[in-house]
Image 1: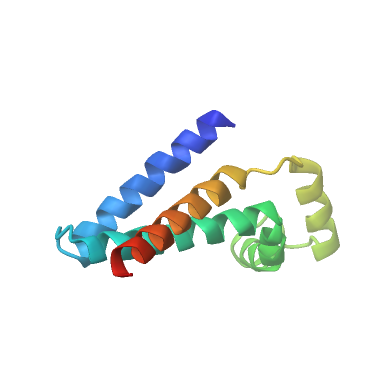
Image 2 (image 1 turned 180 degrees about the horizontal axis):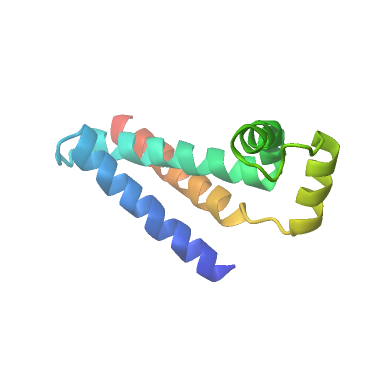
Length: 119
């Protein structure tokens, strides 16, 4: 769990730096840093909540359509059989908690620092 948390911290830090240089042209003013923290926090929080709630299963139909159209293996497979093969191959372990936690930390930092800075 700690390893995944550190990986999420590093990835979100890279996202922050890419955003700062791509959107704000490397200008690290306090407003730009707060905006960057908020955007990265929203992205990480959204990815974390999507994986923690297992809402990614809503996109299984899209995967089935693509596999049915572009793969010879699934031409005669029904959607029910496709779901059975997916359920048997997937492990039931939540993986989104570190991303959710990192997103909440980024959001909290951006909100706390913006309240401190602009009050």
